Amino acid sequence: DAKTTQPPSMDCAEGRAANLPCNHSTISGNEYVYWYRQIHSQGPQYIIHGLKNNETNEMASLIITEDRKSSTLILPHATLRDTAVYYCIVRFGNEKLTFGTGTRLTIIP
Amino acid sequence: EPEVTQTPSHQVTQMGQEVILRCVPISNHLYFYWYRQILGQKVEFLVSFYNNEISEKSEIFDDQFSVERPDGSNFTLKIRSTKLEDSAMYFCASSVGARAAFFGQGTRLTVV
Image 1 (cartoon, rainbow over the protein chains, first blue to last red):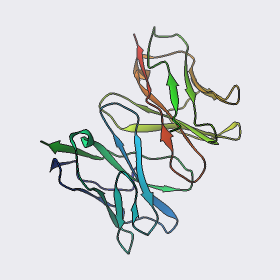
Image 2 (cartoon, helix red, strand yellow; image 1 turned 90 degrees about the vertical axis):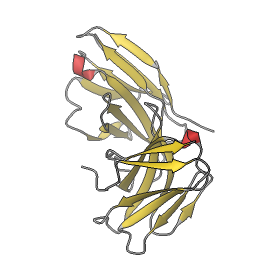
Image 3 (cartoon, chains in turn green, cyan; image 1 turned 180 degrees about the horizontal axis):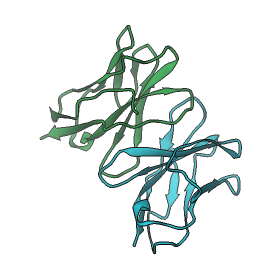
């Protein structure tokens, strides 16, 4: 079973920042937090991952709380193409990714 | 940008037939995975493969399934005798190691 909890759905206005929360209260010290998204039935797309420091790349920012029990994925300027299901996954090393049901993010024009 | 390539994009097969789904992982990657997603359901792990052997498999990955890396570039999933319930999207993924896994666009398998 997935070790994370995410809201089932969220809406965000186009051009605004989308903030997607994730709880992972049982995360262990050497497990990373990964974020993927899936648009329609396409293959899951890697977004970002982190251990304990905040991370930023060209797609998004990842904010991890100091106790590492929760994190937030931030899409700074959401576009319609960001409409997708977003998955927060806790993973150790190169072990399998366990997908939950994710958050269905809808960007509203 | 390197990507994982899967062929075919869509395969229709008769129940009981064998199918082979093909994947070309990213060239310097060493870990390979197969996942599947039945329509409307979660993405489910099937198997992971490293150093020419299966490193982990799920309950779904029974004797009807097998994986192979026949050469230096391809990674295949074979289903020996397909059932209606094998109809799903099948995704291949690869990673360098303890880093992000990258997924292909999938093969839609329809068993009739």
